[in-house]
Every structure is written in C-alpha cells, then in structure tokens.
Image 1 (cartoon, rainbow, N blue to C red):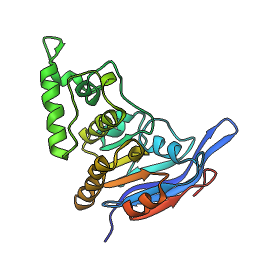
Image 2 (image 1 turned 90 degrees about the vertical axis):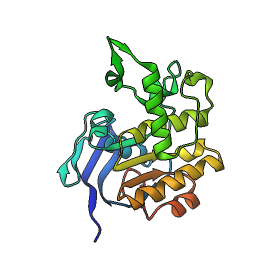
Image 3 (image 1 turned 180 degrees about the vertical axis):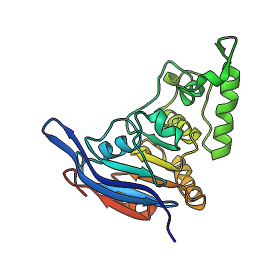
Length: 222
C-alpha cells in the first residue's frame, strides 16, 4: 500500500494582484516520481520554491511524513531531507565546486577557526562516489566550469541532504544526453529506496517517460 510522503492542502501564493498558485491540493507518495507540467507562468516553479523553503505560501498547509511542514529556508527543508535543484544557476562562481556543495555547512570542517579545504574536497568526492555522479573538478572556482558541470555541482549539493524528496526544476535542459543518464539512474534508485522526485520539464516526452504520474498546472491551478 502506498505511503504518503507529501500532502499539500489548499495552497495559495499571491504576489500583489497575481495569484501564482490558486488552491493547490496534491499528494505525493514514497517511491513516486511526479512530473509537473504546464506553460511558462503556470505556477510550477512557484509551487516547488514553496515546497523547498525558498518562500512561504500566502495560505494553505503542507504536511511531510504526516507532520505539518512549513520550512523558512532551503536549509530548514534540507534538515528534514527535502532539497531542490533550481532552473537558474545556483552556484557562487568565485568558490570551488566543493565549497559550493557545502554552502552554509562549512562549520564541520573548521580547525582553529579556519576551513579545511582538503577535508571539504574529500567529503565532496565521497558524495560523488556515493551517488555515482559524473566527475567534475571540485578544487577550482566554478567560474572555470561548464554550465553542465555547475549543474552537477548543484545536484551533488542537493543529494548531500540525503533527500527523501528531491525537486528538479528543468535540470535536464542543461545536460548532455550522456549526463542525463545519471538522472535516469538516480530516479530508479530513488524509487527502490522509497524516496520521491518532483521534476519540472518542458520536454513532455521525457516527463512522461521519467515519471509515474503528472500534475498539470494552468494559470496557477491544478
């Protein structure tokens, strides 16, 4: 029997007169891969940004594993094992790939008040090995990496949270066909381990192939 992971009840998000999300109700189960579809401006990214703690809803409630869930930041969402890879590039280009993976979480690597960069790089490599990610340089500033490599860094950062719910917003658009296979294998692993994924993709064929179910948004409504 399916076990509920995330439940959204009558969620609204308003920006002035714009009703970006209008009475959203949705349930996601453990081990489920859900695609969010809809035209630009339909409310997909707004909804996922609320789930991932990037902004609060105007009204409505969310429940994660049966407990009321209202993260005030992505870090709070990470702490309960919800993480997201955003559509826009989300790396600080002046920092190394390893430092970007542990943004906001570097205190564990401090010695005598200084950050141990070698320890961070080793920990970052372990994340890549654990999740079988395509290798990218972790000891150089992200300014020197390709867009695809930066997106893999963002994915590694999201996976570091050991997500039970992973949200992918148009990530595959930045990846080559070979690197997309990493995402497809990740999907299979998440299903096997009872984790869930929400994916936004404008490639409908890919969305249908990738997901178990599809939620379609139009003008902010399901």
